[in-house]
Image 1 (spheres, rainbow, N blue to C red):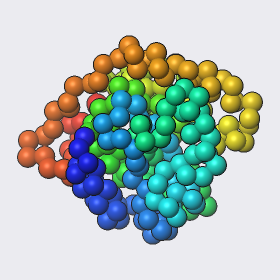
Image 2 (cartoon, rainbow, N blue to C red; image 1 turned 30 degrees about the vertical axis):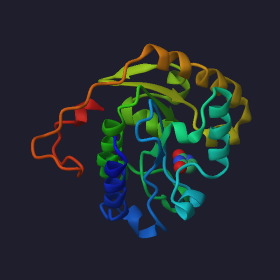
Image 3 (cartoon, protein in one colour; image 1 turned 60 degrees about the vertical axis):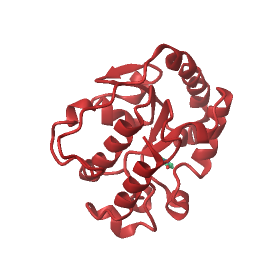
Length: 210
Ligand code: URA
């Protein structure tokens, strides 16, 4: 994905009023990192710090994510980090199904543009985006192929902050990242509907890809 594409998409996200979350945001948090990364992370939603700064995972959960990444030899600029929803839910409540539905077009554009070899799913909301009935405790640490995408569900860093006993198992899950990257190929470019511009697709034809 080239940087111009990222910037156009970010402008589109910044102007989005598709769901109620736009009313309470300071700014959108589209995601950031290397638009050609082989490794992508998807979290849940921006919190207060992210809403203030406009970048994902900049608070305590972000520091923990950086630490987990460093342990397996990655820095943040080498990967791409996004969230299921791009605006902060009020009082940090869970994003609702219709809000996730409104934002889906943007995440899909990001995934299809980046075409990462591996997508690490941080917590339940990112996991259920790909594996709708999954329970995080049951699927974490197990790579799944969903359509063209290889995904690895792990506990959300915020869950580890609340329950530090989850850290060790998450370190083990992060240790799978390098071997999985070594085994996997970058998925091929996804077909786009004819006449498709940089805007979100408005038909259903690509939903099955996720
Ligand atoms: N938690 C998330 O899921 N995303 C962020 O960007 C920050 C905290």
